[in-house]
Image (cartoon, rainbow, N blue to C red; front, side):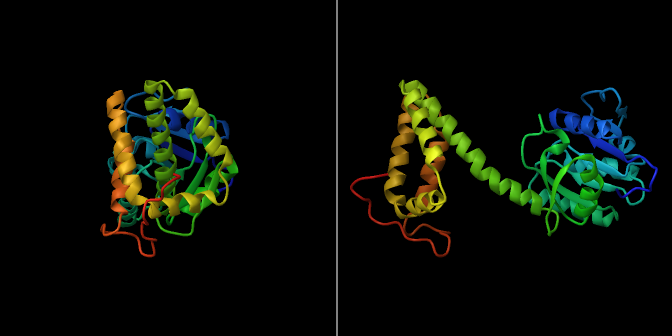
Length: 280
């Protein structure tokens, strides 16, 4: 713990929505003094309710900003003046790396330690024990304060923005895959083949192994020409079924970008070959 022996850790939680309220409750149960602020709701029992970010941060050893990416900078500007000397500001919002770097610069100019925190799983059901990545100058102190209370924190060796970068890179894959599944199943439902497609998707996910990534990415580059046309046809089918082809259109655009002669193709990428007669 980075507070003098015998003194209770004071933590402010800005944003008491689904994530913030769960984390605040766990901090309270772990013995911390928790001060809360949310313009939309009153702090739960046991948490000191305050009327502003600055009031919540007053005397805090640690401030957890868990409101929203859009509100992150304004919350910091409003709340930083209430921090005690050497108090740490941690931004847990899912914001872009650029926003995290901007917050870190504001913190540096104000001589406030700052940590970029990325929560790597849904908070409900996990609370404070949600896996977190921490980067920036205040990352080690963040872990030193919260790990003894039960937090699951991996400290990254890098500046603010690194934790956000790793989370969002993973989000491109997971959320993109999930969105493609939802769109495909909506179309399958409209076409009367939902159960067939569900079984097919489940089988593919079950069979995935170490070689799946190379097989899928290599095939995407090699067969970009044919797959551009294939996804154009798929988008047209979705339109006919009354399903908005958002992911199908995005897939068509990506394959089109990877075709021979397209701009900004990654260095070392294998050129798209002629369309094979059979196969996917």
